[in-house]
Length: 469
Ligand code: FAD
Ligand code: ZN
Image (tube, helix red, strand yellow):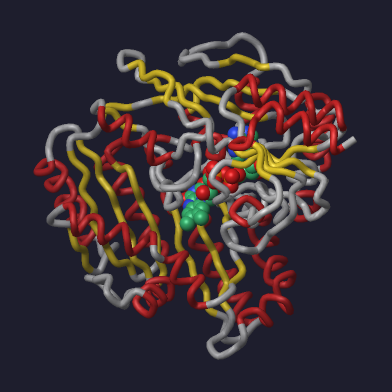
């Protein structure tokens, strides 16, 4: 039976669109090399019609599909299991930008388009597609929507969901739902779009999307500021929001240890304000001029100094310096990998609770695991922390992870629950957090999710075992 399916897929897609045998590691292993599997075949359609035909064939043969974009997800959602009985559906040949409507400020793009390519296409027309994350050179629009990606501009522009107006989706029965609306207002029944966004490939295959664009800001300026406490950093955020309003497009947090790791592994990166417990990166976008942005920054930072919220600050004097500041922030995950395996948490909390959460959870972890090193950084403006736990100096990281991951997660996630936070702010559930979700989400919520999954994908064709078991 599978031989018949494989033959049909090969006939449909030809050699370029059908891969079997040979080295398929790029498709079968995830970015962190934490998950790997083995697919029956990798299929690479070039059109929505081909995706629909693939889904119909797989449904007919009862074979499940794992959709994949840039394969940069961090929770094992886009790698096949190791049964050799799943088809890996890569969208990486569907990259067309179908249309840019400058008056409507929208773009319609295929799911496999790389995020950076879309950013550049918008920029070429003087427009901005604001979604921005460190994986933007590889991740795709389909993957961004399927995971409801966040990144560094959420504070001003929202996450992928808020940037999406319409979708085109291939459903489990191989139908094409054309919901490529460019409307900002449309209250015609249930929001099907929102059902597919964030569904991590478990409800349908996103083949195209209509997304919001914005005018390019005339200037962007970045500053670093150091704070003695996290409470001060949160107050600085309030002050910056008050002074800059929608002009505040980034507010990122880095603790001392995260910057020490960057210093250790990337000593060539300048660190103008090293050694403080907390460093904040602020970004202002301005529709007037760079000089105007700098004036706002200087006033804001002066007030912050007077109120004792910051110890010192450095405003980027040019684009290169601005890039270097961002580079510091974006190098933390890499520096952390170079330091060795670690336990990652991508959590969200009400901004008002972040300082208390960090103080109490840091203390609980230090008491349970003396010498443990905490890499706290992330998007403070969104209440989203990457709260990562590194083994004590001199202790084998892999051994620490194997022995203590469950206990560490227990301490961190129990605290997240106490503050009514989220155990997955932006990376999703995938395979990594399936059990944690089942244990911590309310029974009513899990039951509603199961009802939706069964109704939309009754054969469990799409990405089985992800999000829900
Ligand atoms: P993939 O990894 O290929 O897939 C992710 C999930 O989406 C899988 O479940 C897959 O089945 C599903 N999927 C993919 N395409 C489709 C489709 N067309 N239709 C239906 N389902 C589909 N994420 C953030 O949110 N914020 C960050 O700041 C951030 N920073 C990162 C930094 C680095 C260095 C790395 C490696 C990753 C980072 N990520 C971040 C995670 C990752 O980049 C995002 O989750 C991204 O949105 C995944 O896109 P992708 O195309 O690589 O999707
Ligand atoms: Zn992030």
